[in-house]
Length: 504
Image (cartoon, rainbow, N blue to C red):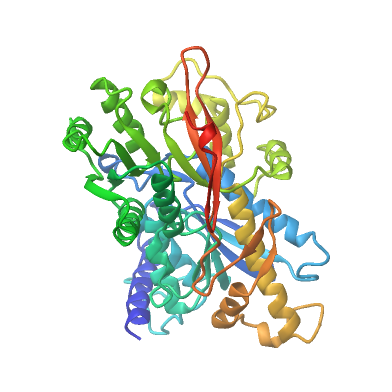
């Protein structure tokens, strides 16, 4: 198969990198950090532990992401612990993991995912290093399924790779409609709903509010473009809502770009309502531009789940954001995870190779204060004691996708449990029919799961791997006398339930 040959070629390049250590033994080789947990069955994990590196920094990875990175990663570790301690789910079978950092961009995510394939690719016996020596290999764990990735662009690139090797993938955050194409992404599933459901809900909201003409605004990329395209298609089919214009925010906006976008939106005065499929930074900068133009009461914003109930885009511009309607997949805070996460420390969480970095960022301190100060030329910096406590010495709020990470792990565990029960004849351990685990067979069991998830809502998949579309609808409401807040004004589950009396 051509895809397999291409991957094998890239893998040979990885082998060559191993040889470089033989050629230059005195040179330090920095390998990507990885979390590895032993187990009878190994799951892969992909999380945006770091932001993407700046173009001029020369590094693929930027600063640590405390919430979307560390909290989500810890949610996978927490879920694996729970499964392994559950006598009814996969009894006598332990889950292990290989967890990698995508650094929040698709190219790096697919490069990292090659790690999941190492046990599947036969190493040619005639491979030699330039020195004539053979590369040094270590036994690799076979990954039976992958939890992740986060961004749709990352999941798309990773899904194209994993399908070649028939490895099922369950995402906790990717919502692009194109991932519903079972012909192209047949091994991809997700526990969050597709933006196609979201676009339908947003159209129904526009109709309920009597908006005849609207504009759309999207961030460049899979999320924004596919979300708006789904809305455009539905609006054309409805014949009720007319899209007057569609604007796109470039990946790398030039100076003054957001002021120009706002000016263009003003060119269709009958379309004051703006449908927004954009990332948080872009939303914030659009609102800033509207505020600079003194358009406090002009636009009627309808934001997708990337806006949701986040405070960061509306901070210090509450008057411009006032009245914005936003949508968010129905979710709940998992109190047991809060207790778990707050109990983590630099001493009891050695398995998380990024936790020391998290600790230093979370508490604004350094463990190696002398070495760091010398390197950075800093005279005064607080030394970490290791006794700091999350939630007491730092702010803490559960990240919104924690529930879905837990549900993704449990979906994989339930599928493996049902597969083991059927194929191993009730034996309390793995049998030869699951050594190795067949990806196609596992996929069929994933698509058949139906259980009560971490928030006591059903976890199940459609035939093409999509989760049901369930949303809460918010309005951001602020006043001169009170702090702005998001208030629930409706919900969407197959149909719209909107309480217009709560909308200001």
